[in-house]
Length: 445
Image (cartoon, rainbow, N blue to C red; front, side):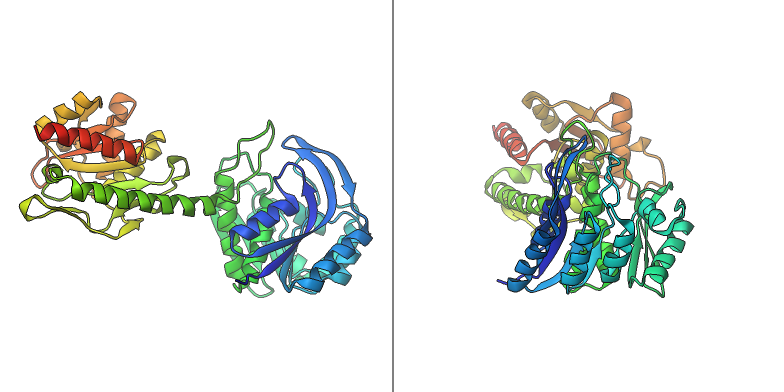
């Protein structure tokens, strides 16, 4: 099997939050092979950098040359290039498209580039794209970059002054309701917006963004799409920044890969549940007239929307003779009532990954109480008019406002045009099957 190869040139972060080891982790997560050339070894943790050992420029040259002797490098990314001698090595040795992340200062204020003029002389001429934040863009140009208009101006000036084909001025340091990154290609200004996330664990986001661009370019994506995908990866990494150490923790670039693995697990769980449903001879007694469906999510901590919740696209259907058929395929992001209700519960209290709707019967409600579940009744006639598509969120909000929590069993007795229904949520697929098994055992007596 062959993969594109991307070279990361920069420092080694002993805390694992940024640097070449972070770059390689990102590159591997998006399907390219990462190789690295080390410019410095840092002694650092989440509290900051304690010591830096600079690698001799001749050693850096040998690292790059050795890699190029054996690998066909599709693109590269630079981070911490400490001094003019190292920058000259990169200028002379690199022969592939280069994403330059101008890490002038670390988050704790440590200066990481000793010679800014050498940076302009040697690294910028090699850059295919440069990715400064607002502060770094301001330092390069000798101006303040504090607004979106400043970002646009800075991107054009860097392109014109230093002849860099593509310039991305990131908006993380610009005070605004959204985070807007500005991409300029010499002709067009492209604004890429995303919600401003509240997380404080953002160490290494610059590395994640730049190495993601390099990886996407190596995979053949055009620059605009490479930047867009890199922004999405970085945003997801910030959303789930790691609470490790006592300072600013690292962003987690592995989250997209972890979520893919979780979704594979969810699909396997759904297959197991379908087998359970179809072999339980009395399961048809639980299926309402409008049929049932199961909603099952990835770990609730990682759920950001309906796209992280799976249901059976064809529902759980009661057929003649007491048979039950599960309507495959399993689909993520399909906006069923069960999926929307589960999402509302997760958004409200952060727990629960499985939910099913079953037939309303006072006996079933009592049996669920006997199993040990807390039960709450919702009166659908209290639902405000004009709530089409928002019923599930209304149910959750209404219950939470009344009780300060969401009991595992929520039922209503229906109304004109609305079938009475029981909705049961659990913390796992195993708990759901155990509870339904107990319920069916009692119903069958």
